[in-house]
Image (cartoon, rainbow, N blue to C red; front, side, top):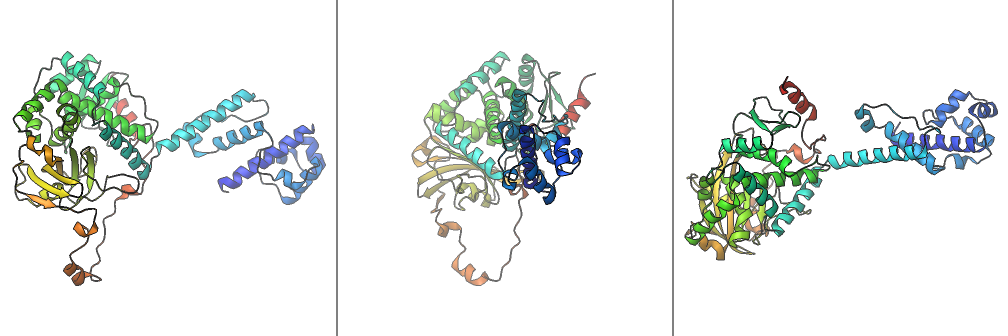
Length: 489
């Protein structure tokens, strides 16, 4: 029987009980009037037995009401509505997962207790719905965060300040933040860093709050998330006083915040800004120099530039991470570069123009150095610096695998501050005009139209809701078993 039919039976039962008790009839007395056992009537009133039509007519006659009154979808009273809600909640799959005993919604249950129980079940259901984010919901939440970051030039002074305070307290004065300094920062917060080779597959790191331990993988994860960054992100949850996320949007916000905090520690503002200012004066800004000076990945250096370049150097810019298939994995722009986007405003997964440097770079034979290009677009001319790389087939902790490119670019007027501004490479893009690069050449269309049948690759993640749990996408059972295994005796 479906949930709708079950709900109707519960309402029917409560209406019968309400009318019976209003007339001062016991189950035995009503049973004598309709010729039925009180135990059967009890099952009917509790919504656990569907009465035959003849019995229903007899009950209506015994209670002196029309059949339509018994079959009304409206609960007969506020209390009855609460009893129905509690009964329905305790029959649902969510309640089953709690592993707690049910409370019988009887007349003896005080009204305030009944209201509180129903309120708790409603809140549990709300949080459950919020925790199960569909890909569309995730894209919307991610878009809101991107637009917020762009509006504030991706600069969060409160995170910069706390990061600077912590690294200075650990003895950092400049250059690359060492593993030992990160471990010292953890110690100052009451944590020990431990490297294990059996982390839960769904977790990037695991923090044991009870015993003050942070478990990390034994080696850097392919794709750029080094051990220092993972450790700092784990510490960030405590530094920034995060609570358990109540929605996928909140989970994404926390990820943005911990990533920012880690970057602010790895390339602290009080050292990074003078470094960048000096290179700007020399008109020799370069992502690769910034990367090497602080011992971070090219992607981390490019993203850190988005935190600092506009706020401190007055340079608007854009950042892209693009796969070899041309799909945009991550993007940021406060310089007017128009990203392709879907109807929700999301840019992730959209194909960028083939003429942009982020895709032209894949055509180069020499990929060891940065690729520079000017691109004329309907929004103006942009200069870009692009570095390509590749990841193992297993991908990194944030998804994706295979070849990718990292691009930092600026409007033409700001190219004068960067190394590579003298490049002679220039392309023209008219996207989103489909004639730019989305339509095949006329001669190819004439040759192959109706003669080609490609089998498209299916991306399962576009269909599935994100797994529910204490933290989105994390297997709680696996994490708790891991902690139990590694907990000190």
